[in-house]
Image 1 (cartoon, one colour):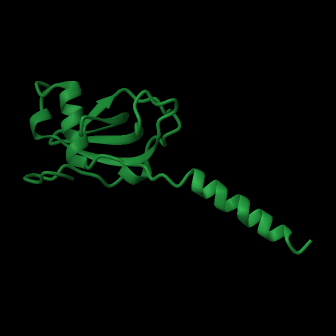
Image 2 (cartoon, rainbow, N blue to C red; image 1 turned 90 degrees about the vertical axis):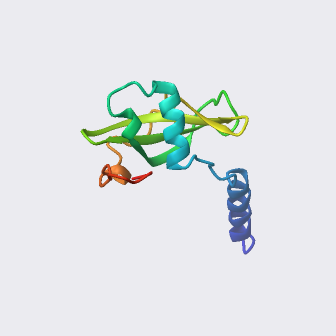
Length: 123
C-alpha cells in the first residue's frame, strides 16, 4: 500500500513527458507577415495593421508538424478584428491558414486590451 503514491507519481511523470513538447508559436511580427501573405496587403488599412496573438493550442490532426491554432487580433487605425488562425512553418517561414481548432476561446480574454499603436511595429 505504501507504494501506491509512487505508482500515481510515475503515471504523472509519464503523462507529463508525453506532453512535454512545448508549443512553438510565431512572434506577432512573424504571424502578421503570414496573415498579410494570406489575405493580401491591398485591403484598406492592411499595410498599417498590427497583429496580436492570444491563446494558442495544438492543431488537431495537423497537416504540418508543429501546426498551432491561435486566436489573433488584427489591429488597424479604424478598428480591430478577432479571429482564429492556424500557423505552421514551411522552410523556416511562418504560414497562416484557416483555423482547425475550434475550441479556442472567443472572445479571447488575452486579447481584451489590445489596441493599435501608431508608429509601433507590434501592439
